[in-house]
Length: 153
Length: 153
DNA sequence: CTAAAACCTTGACCCGGGGGTAACGTCAAT
DNA sequence: ATTGACGTTACCCCCGGGTCAAGGTTTTAG
Image (cartoon, rainbow over all chains, first blue to last red; front, side, top):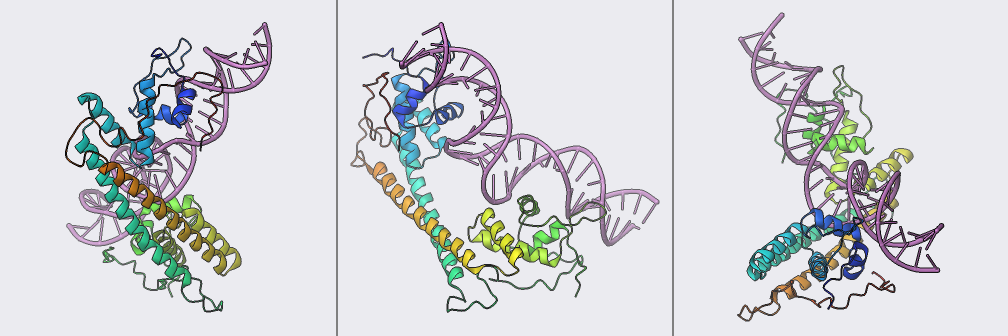
């Protein structure tokens, strides 16, 4: 027991693994309530606040956006119990995002490798560096003309 | 022929697939030289400038950072010919970064899936939502004490 | 009691631009 | 020569998820 126990921001940070700055940021973003202050103006957090912070930390470590987390916390405090369906939806969306990102990175990676290993790996430095010359068509045909509206994909 | 040909920023943008904003940004970041201006203050680009922009666009599409690109361009203009070894090093580093990122995302993904599918999938909503309760040890033991210096990874 | 450590607020910065705005420049046609 | 339609200028604010600095107050340790 000891519900009277209040922690300053630095101690709260140590308990949660966050930094004081991050905690202040979460407060500004509305994830954490505005805490009461000591006579000297120090933020004072309760054990419940610490729980909230720990939750935020876990959620962040899963890659959830602060906005998503804020949404969950809001729903939670409105309805008392957290809305599992909503949370699950967010998690599923995140998984989808990750899959998309991984797919994109895989494409990038192969383009990168192809460029790196393009001509000149064989064993001679002639005149062409990868990337620099890749897709390098000289711009000889510049028309200042009016009908230049070449659509650009 | 036609080296006198100068393009305004919008035309340069169309030729390279960049936006005028991006081009101005590259100028501020030192990737593109400060171009001469028309009597009315418009930036005027040469075909060589266009080539540089096209190179930047290719490099960006490979995910290179503006700083890396700036480095390559600087070396290139100092030594005349682009330093293949350096470029290749940058590309290899990028590949490594991508691999690291993908590995990290894979870990995140499985944590996310595990959390999402944890208890309650079976078919009942008792009292626990995933995430919210995951790793949820109540903070009962708060020491205001001095020896709190638990190292933070 | 004094000095150090912790805390306070405000503001700027990182990346790679996107969006918007007011005020000019430029070019074709009338 | 003027009009109208764009193009361009510089400037400032915005995004995420914080980090860092400055300069001042408060609490805590010795």
